[in-house]
Length: 281
Image (tube, rainbow, N blue to C red; front, side):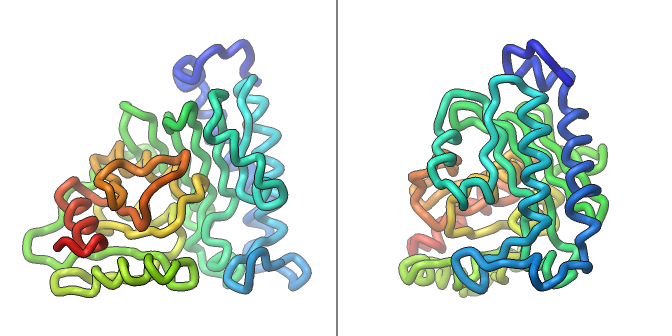
């Protein structure tokens, strides 16, 4: 266990491998033994039939909550399932203490259906700034990491998002209509235009990884939950990408964003997507 850490920078100088180990152990202990092995009683609905939670989500988050808090004394953990149980805990994202933002199984629907397209995401933030992130796809055995100012990496190889090829349709992953308001649906219709190929997103964390790898040009998402975005947005930034809300400002994990927002391989693509979403194109 790491002790006597005073700042996030000091911790990140030698503690990143401990976080990666905790994420891998949570997946190995609580997630993968349940992959394609879930019983009906291990799956529940939260807000509705399209919002699922499993024993893997709950137990992996409990594992990470205990492990991460020990790594950085004075830090707090904001996990998706804990916030569902007690929404007040989300306020820590806006506080001054170092906060671990955890999504134990991002892409629970895929996980439930035996699809390997899910991941575990952890971000370390303070004062609304994300300093580091870990995105682990255990069924694919991919670990993506990012340190603010230090680059983005996938399995040890540096990531560069690059720019879309001229003349090719932009590939954009979008929120599913189940998770959008009528106003947001109208905004997303702006992507139904020549030169853009929109599709519904899978795991948000893996879509961000696709952008960082240069495999996807942009996203257009309509919700703010920090656990879905904090890790991936830093990964995209450090790979050379950009994220913008409809006001042209970067997305804030503390909330209050004008939605939908985009993350993209480069600034020109981000601004093009924002123009389409705002009806100004």
